Image (cartoon, rainbow, N blue to C red):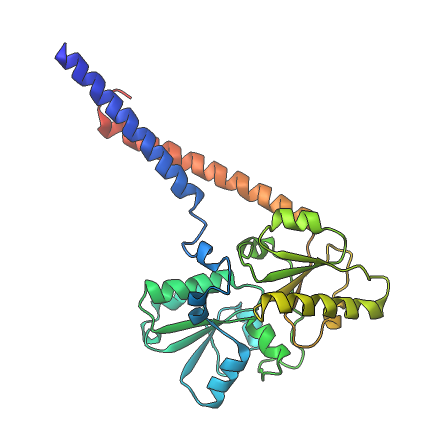
Length: 300
């Protein structure tokens, strides 16, 4: 009788342990694509983030003072060859940790400017986990450098590309970055806030008058700058209806980017990614479950 009771207790213990494992596994699988610093980065004004960011003016001052800074350009090889900051080295973001000679250097990572979450997370990992002495990301990337009159070199240095992008993955990566201010041109504020709840949205209603576009943009930029400070990147959703010329209306060295895709295409991307992640999670969960059954020996 005691043997049967002991067997039941053992089975209950196995079931409980297995249930706990599934819960933990689901938690890990759900958070697999989210880095540990996502919550830290949700507000760029948090003091401990400042050590991982450098502005254009500070970088230019350091270069003028001949400080031993190593500029690592992590954009594509094609973009790097077309236009780059003089003296930059091209390197994939993920490969920086393998370069031992950089650990004791003052490293500054340069990207396009509309991509901050990934390089900022990598800076944190390189210092906290890989033992790098100093590693920062240039806020605004090469676009901020160009907008502020910084020198560039390359085969297309005289005609640098406009600060536009169309990859939905980049929007997804930046969804937790609180420094974005969306300049809503087409009355889509509710949709934007639903998709990006951590971003600030300012509506612009003067598309029919070219002269008023610039005034409206500048007014929106100035009002948000007073509230949020200098760490601001502005984003315009063109949605296939706007013009890239809108970017030229917002001059004055402001970081204004344009997403060429549509909000509906981004929503489709999210649904597709959700299906892929769900399928992968189910496969992994099944494999883990099958792997646990063999050594358990409790008849489950």
